[in-house]
Image (cartoon, one colour):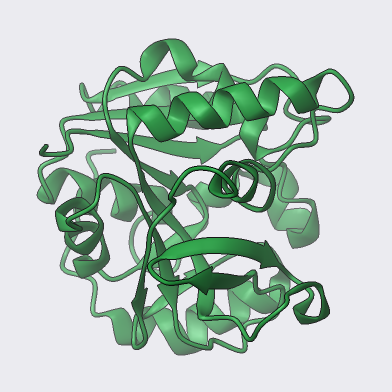
Amino acid sequence: MTIKLAVILAAGRGTRLKELGISRPKGFLHLGDHPIIIESITKLLNSGIERIVIVTGHLAEFYEELKTHYSQITTIHNPLYATSGSMYSLYCARELIDADFLLLESDLIYEQRVISIAINFPQNNVVILSGKTNAGDEVYVETSGDTITAMSKNLSNLNHLPTGELVGICKISLPLFERMIDYAKTKFTRTLKVDYETNALVGVAQSYPVHYTLIPDLLWAEIDTTNHLSRAKEQVYPNIGVAELWYDD
């Protein structure tokens, strides 16, 4: 099935970016001429995505304004963004998700090719892994055969050496999504701080195959901290060679 839907999680407060995170959402950081969320949206549209759902939270008005420029965008607000995790944000979008979809985070920069790799992966779900980045705050992924088994930021929590690092780009099938929702509901009775990756995906993967693909040389960065931002600006972004993008102010 051709993927036409993407979901972008954009509710985070960006507290580890200090003043930058207070004044604007992480997706509106500039590394080039345009906010990184615009660059991501452009890559998605160039890859055949026709609908983009953005889950908002902190400074939601920035993302609301995007809808005046992109008819493909729908927003849904997570009103509990300050006290919930990424899986709750995804849960907030459940009524808008009616097909297999790409799942991304708003604070990513990445090569265009990774979107095509995810869309064209032969299985109906896939978690994208990269080689070693030394970026700090990495999420390491343990696998068995062609599926994931565990994820952790602490290598000592894994039973085996990791296959790669979590990028924050996945292809999620509807059957997998339904299982993630069911898993999350059991956790939400105790806490809303449930992550889609280390909690829901790993939890479901114990009984349902969640596939992965490793792209050892992928250029990408997640921007959660000031160190991440410096690395993205100085090392990663200049090497990605982003095509000229436009944004109609």
